[in-house]
Structures are given as structure tokens and as C-alpha cells.
Image (cartoon, rainbow, N blue to C red; front, side, top):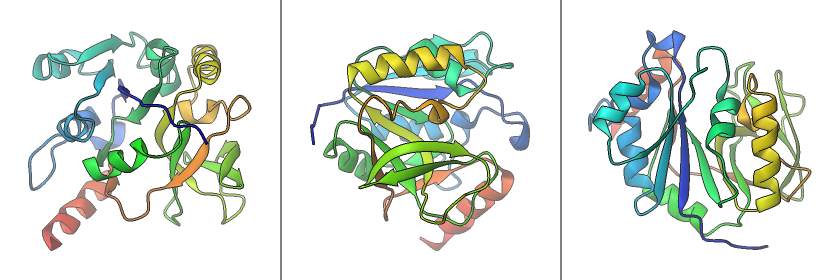
Length: 224
């Protein structure tokens, strides 16, 4: 298993959340710390070069975080995050992260010490039809699919990936640009390089898709 140092991060934050009153998820504030999701990303990936793909609320984000690099998806309203990734992806080893998850340094540190090509996954019963599931063999992802889960052994992908293989990065970018209406995770280049399924385990990762997700975060934060 190869290990390559990854110093690049692409955060996909171009979309508008219709389930969250039309806010940009990257600007959602933690109920206790009041840090935005993007604040937490900056902390977690400290020392790495961060590029944010923006679309909806682009000016708000760029004004608040002028120190970051930006790529604009002008067609954010009619494409999915595959197009955003295709516009930003190069052949440099990179983390790819959705702009709707809280995470911390401990998780990133663990992933830094993992294999060069991986997808962060989790086994959970709380899935929606848009969830992307992974079919694995010997801990490597051999296929992905969206929709109802076909087997309880198939973990859900979280949208966080670390890819270093240059051929895989090129193939992923090309597929994302050709199929911009899909999720980037649906186009994961599993046929080009071995991509390991790495479980979240007990590390902190909290996805905000609905008001209920945020309410549960309030309750969880209140217990600590």
C-alpha cells in the first residue's frame, strides 16, 4: 500500500440547500462554538492548500475567507457537485470534501497516515435515497451505486476522498466534466486505482442536510 503526502484540499461548496432555507451549507454555524463549517475545515486541514468551489453565495464566502483559493462553478444551479469537482481537480494529490460536514483535526490526521487513495465510509442505517453506497472486496471499493441499499455490508460513502494516483485523478476529472449532473462519488475511479474504504470509526464527522440534522447536532453538543 502506497502513501503519498497530500497537501491539497478541494471543498465543494457551490450548491444552494433547498432543505435548509436556501443557505450555503459551508456558512452554517456550530451551535456552541459558532464556527462555520468552513472554519472547521480550515482548522482541520491546517497547513494544506485549500481551494473552495463556489457558486451560490460566492461573494459572501470569498469576502469572509479571502485567504483561500477559489474556483467558480457558474452553472451551480443546474449541475451537481461532479461538475464542481471537474472544474477544480488537477493531477495533484488531493482531498475532496463536501461543504456540508463538520470534522476535526483528529480525523484528518488519521487519514493523512492512511493509504494514498481512499474513501471515508460509514456503516449506518440512517440513509436516504441519494446516499451513495460502496461495494467492497478486501477493504477496497470495487463499485459504487446510488439508491436503496442492496446489502447491509455495503458502507455509505461520506463524500470525503483522498486520491493521489495521477491517472485516477485525470479519469475522475474527465468523468465529472462529462457527467456534471451526478455526484462526484458516483464517478469515483475505482477501475483505475485501488481505493480503500476507511471507516469513520469514532472520529467526529457530522453532516448537515436538513433542519433535523442541525437539531440533532444541538442536542449532541449540549451533552458534552
